[in-house]
Length: 497
Length: 103
Image (cartoon, rainbow over all chains, first blue to last red; front, side, top):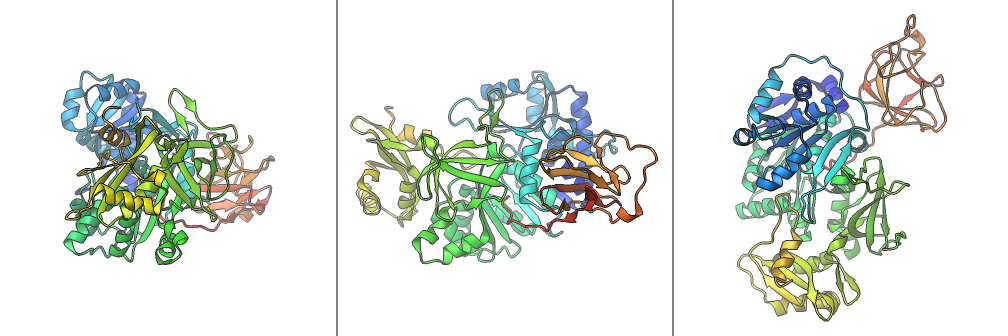
């Protein structure tokens, strides 16, 4: 809320958010947030929830909730039935903003108040300026984000104002954006990157253009018509944009200056092709978790250029690293006993910093007394502090006592000219405990058989890392924010398990 | 004034300046604005105080102010006419260190 008030004072006339034809300025957003706060407070709600794709309701509800001192809860709008009801029960009583159809469906059976997106925005925008002071307690909950629940019941990650403000102040300078700067946000509101993008944009004064439902065609069209200068995408989005542009044979986005990506593993082939398509753009790879208020490490534009231009394989490999820790964040790799390991050795990634929350509703903070949070991500640091991810700790394959990283094997498969996507998982094996299996998507018009790919991996890695089974599939299962659903891959490759 | 803690917001007793504490020294220090100690965010300014004309260089929205030791850092969240100071020594504007956009 402080961020928005500063923006409203500093550059109130600038456009804060564009959504389709609708536009909202910073001063206007400030007033609308005040009205939304009053409505939410009057309803007696304990949470302000948004069950919808991106629209002007997102910034108004986010800042309105902060003003009212209530947690903001963006929910996955693809949920329905029992799954949705279970989440709604956990945030009752709620002030819920949703689309018109859901509004009619939920009215009367929700504990709380339901407002349609259109009514909510129209009422907030037509209200007179609101005088009441906003909550200023940095320890209050700003946002509750339900995890995607790929490993069980969704957990609610808690981000307090102090975490989000630390993230923004640690990574952005106030009012630093040029008035023409425009950021295209295509991640949904319930993804931490969608929240972080909005907060950073507010503080820097960069206009946000919302893309509610991603498609590569729509992304390119908006990038052109809205003269987009900055964009954030998840790797699957970038892969589709690159495929689309290469098919069309042109990449005319002269305004695009910065293309950042994160939220999943970026294949080397995709980033190399993207850098060729947008030679003038600054690329940035951001790694972070919901529990760390988004970005904690960054592979910046210079890092991309150095790595791409290098002939040294170790330096070139940095293109698939997630860069170095932000100045306000510390990273350490630890072994299973919790001891820090030297550069080059893999282990679990631990992180410390003011923006790290590491807290789940109902189960407390998972942060040590000296401030370290165990991410459950596996990785290693090179001699200069560049971090390489190896996937989730739980995805590590244990074959005959040897720990194998799926990511390393996937990278090698992806280097094969016929392979466009690959997922490696462990499947139960009577002899080794776990065996390596892969699901592979072939490029259109290209062929490769199991024996050829096995030989390809065996030559580049040890034989223990060679997939014993390779299935050829049309596509890999990803959730809507680009996260590979390894459980689904495993179920397909080892149906008897 | 109570001990400063990062995240705390305080305001000037003599002008519109409001700041948030980004970093604070371990020892107690007195932060002034416009020549008068700053107040808790919800405190009423004492009667009879006014801006000292020798401490009226003003504050700028969004700038970070640091002391010489670098252990006190304040972010201006609302500008005003006073000069920020710590134990009588004026604070300086901290240079920006831009990072590439990551979101």
